[in-house]
Image (cartoon, rainbow, N blue to C red; front, top):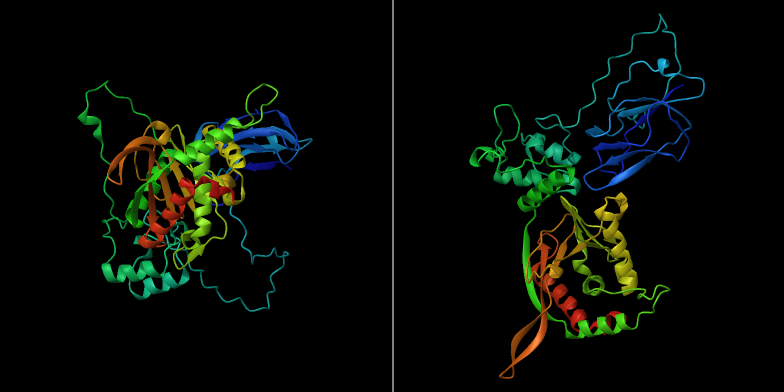
Length: 434
């Protein structure tokens, strides 16, 4: 019997992806473990392996096809003795998973004497928005919204993954809900078409890929739903620069004569930030709607710029790792991020992030919190500056850092304590070794 090969879910939240490339063609024989295709999401490019032995009888989805739903049939695998003529029509609609309480029943002949079973009441359907997409909401939020006559699909959820919770309904009862258009969909500003503003031939139109669409959607959502505040500090870095130079100079040489490692300023920043979160554990947290998660370990994400967007791979338990381990891990994650070869578990999670533009000569900037993270720290360039001390003008090396906090989890004083702990680590790097 032929076997349907379906679009895999590469992460728990993946709903669709792009079938970027086929490594096989119709008629090719495959064995378990053979790479047959490449799938692109907004964050990664992953290889799909065959799980059964057979022959590719039919490729249903052409390479380059976008927005292929998870569980859609993308190809058909023939077993021994079968031919492509046996396949027939193939539906590309995603296969529905059986319900947990659904059990297969043996065929039974109807008993003519038995009374007809009572007609079952239809199960309530999940709430849906005007475009037919499912709206995630807690049972309590649905009940409260129904009692108040509020359309739950019109609400913007503040819970995990945009889930509508009790607080969202209470806010809507107090402040009102977004106005709906005549079609019933939530009113939204129309996207501006600037094509008429520019002379023909003076610009090039490039279609947004999945990553850019996701970045735009998430940042727009964050700016409108997450209350953020920023605090800034100037930090002296003479001791840090000295420690870095001494450690790099002492690095053993490999067989090729090159040092086995070379620490960057960002490696020290990652370590110092992870330890600061351990010293101020109340700030090592993430927002979860009805609750706040306080984390016992420092899982620190690092912002990596890639063509068309941004990755934030996570260094797990960063506080327990040496500077050399952090350096090697960040280099590996950054390298694979630029080629979209990260696995989903490598760029999800974490409670905070580090964004460093100092290597570009940027003196000062502020970053946007990436939910569910509670904080993100922005690192500027180290530079010599004049400063007054005891009535004299002196020269010292400083860098400006800015901390962005989600005010729902980290208040001003708490954010100041966290930044002060980080500053102490950077100005006295020997403390990172204690």
